[in-house]
Image 1: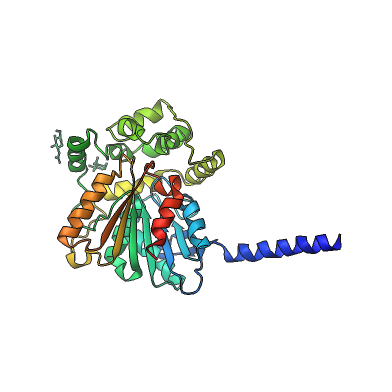
Image 2 (image 1 turned 30 degrees about the vertical axis):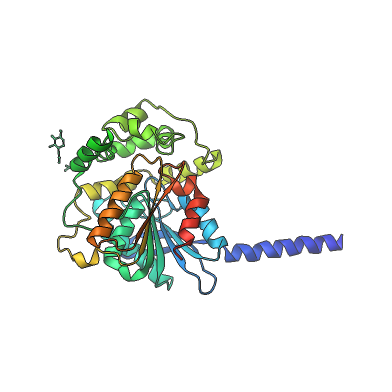
Length: 345
Ligand SMILES: *[C@@H]1O[C@H](CO)[C@@H](O)[C@H](O)[C@H]1NC(C)=O
Ligand SMILES: *[C@@H]1O[C@H](CO)[C@@H](O)[C@H](O)[C@H]1NC(C)=O
């Protein structure tokens, strides 16, 4: 009996130590009066730290496998819920979602934690934010990884949605950003919240190809959710994970998350006084695409990489295509993605 309780105590003590060394969630007040929640784990001495920036509609929860893989390998991580998401502030004003401000918030977190250099990793809108952070805070990064959405340098003009949709319709038979028009409508957040199971089943689909017919073409996503259509839960998300995801997203609602799109469409992300010298990334950069991603298509990433290599924007660029994965590449094929990320350390 005694031996056994000592063994039990030893196990309890051991798991307490492991828990203390694992990732923890912290909060910080940043500029603009906002509060950020972020998951953080310290690296083993001499190891790098990864900054993980999530996309839409997501939260730091989408990095759950990546965080485990990187911390198990001794790396540090910082994974914020970015403004509008999870346990961070969710202001309703579009202006608060200008990417320059969001990048400053993330830089403030790193400064507060005494972290002066990171491997920058962005997924989807997180890639957009990483692009912006490169422009305003390039000194922070030793290398960068863009998942699903390639590098898109801060520029002088607002995004030209119609041009992108026309060009991609000509190339692929559907406009990759046709759903943006719906996201720009005033009732979009309410409709998504009301039909959230339907929306989630479409955004995290079993078959990535459904995006070509029901997300990308203008008006289709709205039609799908109003009809409450749904697709089967994909194998890469458990029922419990799906519930957690919905709870996180519905807790704050979609006004904040959709403001990321509205800010871009309102021209809030452009830099009128552009310093082109700061656009070029003279560090090792990787693009990681899911082979079946209908929005972040691998060909588009490859085109951006080739053009960047030629123009000098991306002198040291490498591209990876993960087979059998769609848009949620780090959730769907976490090990493959973590292995690529570890090479950036
Ligand atoms: C896109 O295509 C539509 C329809 O063909 C056309 O009216 C519009 O001017 C085009 N816009 C741009 C920016 O190319
Ligand atoms: C988005 O909405 C704003 C304000 O309602 C409008 O000015 C803008 O033209 C819209 N953009 C697109 C691409 O629909």
